[in-house]
Amino acid sequence: MHGALQHQVRIFWQLVKKELWLIRKGFLDKFADGIIIVAIQVLVFSHLLPLIGMPKTLIAPTFIGSIIQLFFSMGYGLSLRVVFDLQFARFIDYYLTLPLGKTWIFAVYIAQFVAEVAITTIPLVSFGIIAMGENFIMIAPSIPLFIIAYLLSLILIATLFLSFSFMYSFRWFFDNLWPRRLSPLFLCSSALFPWKKVYALSHTLGVLFLCNPLTYVAEALRGTLIGGPDFLSPLITIPAILCFCVIMLLICNKGITRRLDPV
Image 1 (cartoon, rainbow, N blue to C red):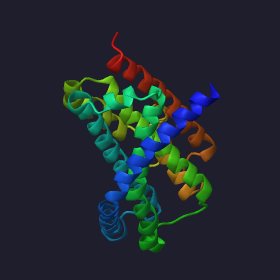
Image 2 (image 1 turned 60 degrees about the vertical axis):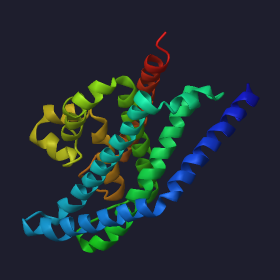
Image 3 (image 1 turned 90 degrees about the vertical axis):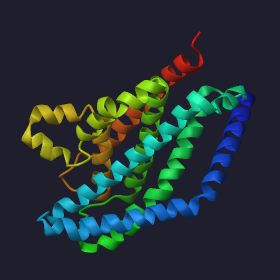
Image 4 (image 1 turned 135 degrees about the vertical axis):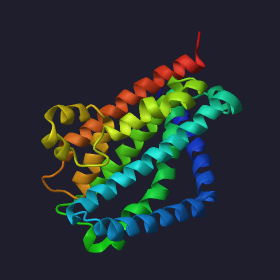
């Protein structure tokens, strides 16, 4: 049993190394994408939004919301690759011929996604905050907790979009995913505004937002990078993200069983 596990770990690592090699070949393009996004975001959040009267205290939370929007867009890109592969290329059949469990195959997809998004968003998080200077107000940041929240958030987004890829048919994915899943998921979360502001407006709406995993992603990143009493505690948001990761993995397992093991 122990030897079989070691064998699977070695195969998994070789597959990850292959994906990392492909990502490294396109590193400059990914890094350039991140720099371009940084320049646009700094212009918008440091100069344009203050012109229309946005308070400085809201610039940092909104900026983090834009990062989550980028997570969302890249997650959709991941799901597109998987959906087209399932429908046409069927490269996943090669993975299935390997002496590797389906959980490890999902782990390869997740590792690839985390690496790609990190390359694009790390410049946005680091250089962008530096470039914004005093416009990005941090009260009590915790960098170690932020790193944990950041990585768990990427894993959650990856598992969320992988579950969409395997749970829905090719036609349903393109016809209904945005209006029925993605748009409500993003808009009915605190990605665009702090959760406590929503709860102050309507307790019922605030409680409903707590059923959305993106709410915990947004509040975790804000609570760890900005800090202060205006956001949910990382002691709540980080365990919640971890729980949603487990739920999404179970849904992924159900989806891959239905799509790849129909009998």
